[in-house]
Length: 473
Image (cartoon, rainbow, N blue to C red; front, side):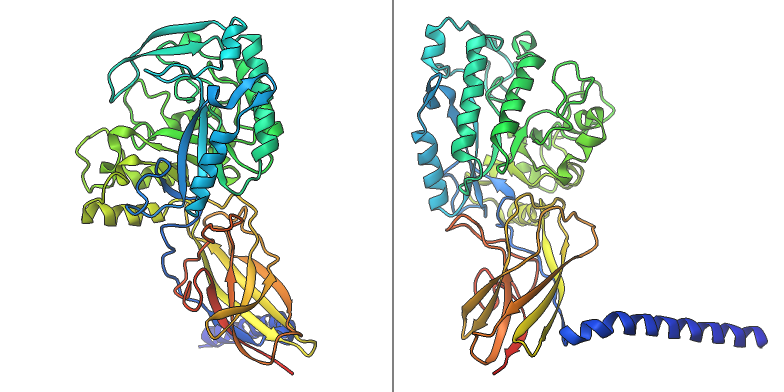
């Protein structure tokens, strides 16, 4: 009995300590915050910017929800001399894609099976050597002739560096662009010349390309095809460089098994490249392409090809934000495939949820706001887009205020991030309003970031309704 009484006394003391602690911590808050509003979760839209499935430009507009489009450029179309460039093809693509309210991803190439005239003529005139051979690495298409330039040629290397510098001066931070894959080297710009590995660029040339990209692009992310550490036999180390990666055999050669010959599988390469590469997704975006043999059918409950890997597991291991997949955009998929694709693609990249908001109004006509933000997705958000608050009345936003918080660096599973802001509402007419939040897309017609909340788009499209607030005389 005495032990039970002592235990009860100790429990009471513990409760009193907790009460005092909580009272002290919230006593100051109560001066600014008088209303706490919990917000309910609901899955975010599949079509959120800078994530999800990506078709080729202009394809499948009404087939599957998407916010980005992909295209290739021939190097010969863009570079006309060592210091002269033709940006018209890029401008036409970016204007067309942005006109549809989407961002573009692109890659530039010099070699493609069964295609010619990809290498600028001025380089050929200056003696650039070209190797022509039958490329047998063209599945599911038949083998085709390909032309590989001598990547060690000094003039070609000079052209590469000049081109990347000019590309960055013109397009770094352009809101019409989502991501750039490094390209330039190898078949399809994928940084390999398999089966003629002997013709691929040396580590010296690779380093020159990466140096040029790092110097030219400080805002727009650039993605490399292959992770590499210090001991990689083919690729210069890139694990510590400011590049993302793109897995172009996603769902096929992503997750290794115990079989032989899988050294080039994406997760194997990440592991070999070391911790910096394995953690790359935390600071740099991961993209890629679902393997053509798996297009569309990767979302079936039991894909007909046993080589196709589990989509969810591949997403969870790679933390991929976007993937090309022409199979989902050729025609409207069957109901079961569509439902599974929507559910799985929604999990790619970020998914921001706001669990609660606290508000209060002081005598100086300042509206105090504290928003709790968490990421329920599989990757962070990689651009420093700025949020804004809005006051809604009669179904329209009557005033906006900048939000001081950031989205970047908030990882899945992190503790919620707190945005704390003070909004000057002295010039707002007295009355009741809906306080709302959005993260606008810097692309004028682009979709804003939409939250995983039931009140998203409830009162005004693009805005998350947070709570009701009042302004005073």
